[in-house]
Image (cartoon, rainbow, N blue to C red):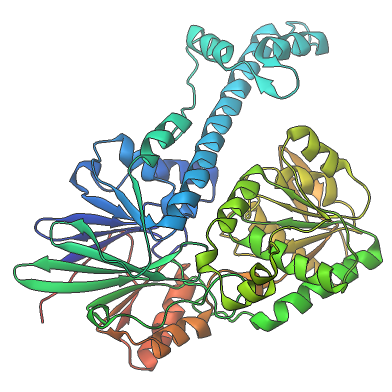
Length: 528
């Protein structure tokens, strides 16, 4: 029995681990790398495993850094199934279709720019070496229908006619639609066959709706091995969802190996109980400046949690009831998924809302923005308001346009409520913006490049790490100490190297056999 660690190893994206026996190979997650566009694109286009040898995929949850390369796998000789919880299957359908749309849109825009720039070069004046404004308008009209719609067929034909290399999307909406046919959703605490001699049982991970701790039993040469995989562990005491499972069935307790996340292996969040009050203070401070609060937010999980807490604050009259725009069609759809799975809500949510016949995810001041026109109107709104928009790391999506309109105004606030991976715009805003705050906002503000232009970051930047959906260092230890699992060895994944190594040192100090694998490393499990 062996495990090979391919992704989210000494980093936090691209989650993928291969469980193998003499007869079976099963993937734990098949996630997308996120970060620098060129580097991530290269990583994502090359699968480290031959899809034809993989029996099935066990998907811990629907986030794209765990699910985003499944369409690539399914397109290339993979004949298995994707095994996950029912809520994950519902959410993954929306997230993967959105990912495919982004892939197609990005490729189309890059191809448009390549053809446009080629035509500019061809049509430039020999005397001035410049393209006239009239000629630029004619070329744009040739390639675009109105302001926002690209003539993709025309662009591709011109690229082919002039032998210009075109960018292909990582996968398409059509690829995803075929992939969704192989998803199978199961309840928690139900044993599912995932291969010849392999079974998996899901327990609640408390990270996002449908997230699961996977316990896998694998038989090889009359020996049974048991591997646990936390996926991403959630926090204890957060609103909406139940806490991570601590009680496991007797047959699932003895683990030869636990593969555990370590995103915040060295960090400690603020107490969950303080989240509502901290958000309240941010809202009141922003209200005193007469500004807008811009919140880059993951469409799945974080947005619904923020809606829930804003709902509570508004109902109690503790903050001004500003208009709230949820500017993400994806978040709108995913909020409906939350509404369809009340079986995973914690007791407080049931008592506060469901038993009173009310929705946790709706209140009068909130508007779900759908069309581009509505989004543009919200961006240009100069009256104080709150906007939640994707993507959470500010790498794509409508949040970029809200930042473009709002970040240069010192009355406004950008609220960071989640993890920002290295090399993302969100991380630069977090690091440089909070450093500027600590300096007393002295000197010139940091400059941020987005959408091809540079903007001064004059808006206030505030970070509330307690909103993270990931367990912090103390909560990871709590899971290990308070669960009834009996562990032989722990492999730490899904953390930047400093975080993983720091948690490894701490675990060794208190008696755990822990290690941090390297990318591509294979660990062989020996029979006892």
